[in-house]
Image (cartoon, rainbow, N blue to C red):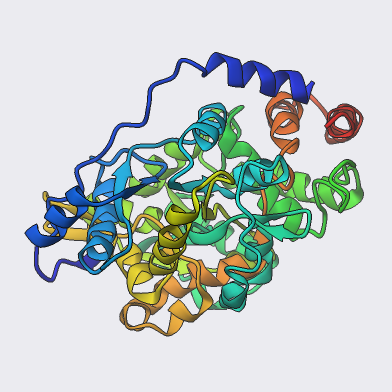
Length: 442
């Protein structure tokens, strides 16, 4: 909490694009509520860029981003001003917008950057932003590229950490700082169960997006991968993946919340909030969720790497359409540099404002490595773990075609494993066979 200090892959894709052809034009968002009048007047007089985010502009997150945009507009000088517009993560709709509204800056999930970059819909940013590559972990920077070229610059995102209830651990006599391996962690959750009656780690098992990214952190942590370097071969049918799945289902499962096989991350958050489990794997919003609900206990944060797991990451990138005009391109490049600056990145960690609590709550974290040395991280050193998690990421969709594998094969199969309908061996064989067919056809 940060206190307020003032105010068939090709066929599938074709179908998706056709279905969205009559979709609505993005709605402009009023970003002038906190901008100086002079900046507002100038923005109305000259040419403007649109900045399409992945949230509604009227949301707390949209308003937090609007403050950063307004700060840019106030000092833009001769550059084009920026107008914030509502957005989402509808890939088909974004594809139409990239070709129809070229004078814009887009916030895109890394998987979309790779997809649209490889298809020629995004501007090559390799030379323009090569000088900032060293500010990011290589694993994260590479997620904004395709074919050896850069199409997206990391802006903000999330990495997961192991959150814990300090009160429950104290009652159980568990020292969080002593948890340095999976064996240590298993000892800790057994102590919590024996001495407090609470569960250990909150797990998800429902057939949902949450199951995939949650389990992948174990798969990557145990040294396996989803696909090969060529992006066309499934590589997870091996003993390491099987061991990770057995740990998740057979070892951790008995200590999880009793309904875990039917739960998503939403239910896990609720169990954690009600102090019925001692640990959960979540991003920074898992910390602020407890604070927003009256702080019934203090949340501790451990890196997933401490227990041998890799952090699920979700970097959002700033990207430009390939057809952007030369005039707009100059201003768009300047705007991107502002948004990745340390000052603008600090505004991200400041978070969204809650009128109810007169407080700002972080909802995502900056990705630049050097932000860990900034004032805001010195004030909140516990948040550094969320940047450090980007160093060894678990990537839920390593190649665009894996999204189809995930939706049609991987996630449904994982659910069957968790419920006991399928054996782990049956699942891994099925994913390898059907996944290779999908990846090979891309």
